[in-house]
Length: 215
Image (cartoon, rainbow, N blue to C red; front, top):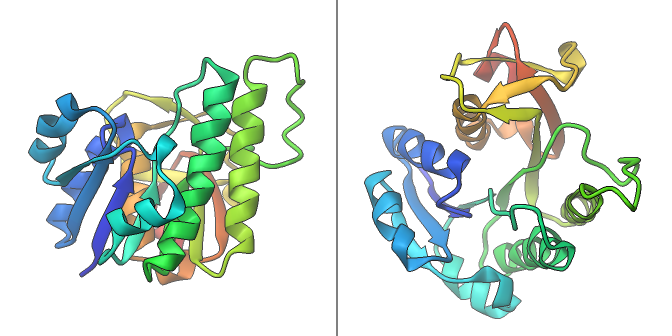
């Protein structure tokens, strides 16, 4: 089994992911910015790592993730200020990729979104533009690295109970919605599925068991 480090360890997807990884036998570290979130992360089965990656350089992030086998990016600025969106969703994400390579991590799973890409078409006056552009540039950079990467593109996230069933864009998904439970399960399945490497997988809730859909 692997040692997995999650960037954005207190996020709604990450807190669902950690118990799944632990149940599958993985060892999990979760990076959080706020010390008040340590208890929630620990209760989810992960080892809390308190650090604000927005302000750490590549060397310091590499030191944080030394000894891990897999990195999962599930962090984000949460919208709002465009400057901070670029600082976290693009710049810190890119530094985490470089740090993963420096620390000897080969496997990197990025949680992006359905429709992400440099051709996103979001108008520069739209409040969503900074996020769309930041994610697109981070994803594009990841594709250029030598990491064994997978980019997951879930559609609109809901808090409905997980179904264990998704469909990918290739199987007809249109970008409607998917539960956070199922996104977490998809990340966990991706880590254990070498065949997902170097693929951008967009998905909705659907009719196919997650492992089969990813395969």
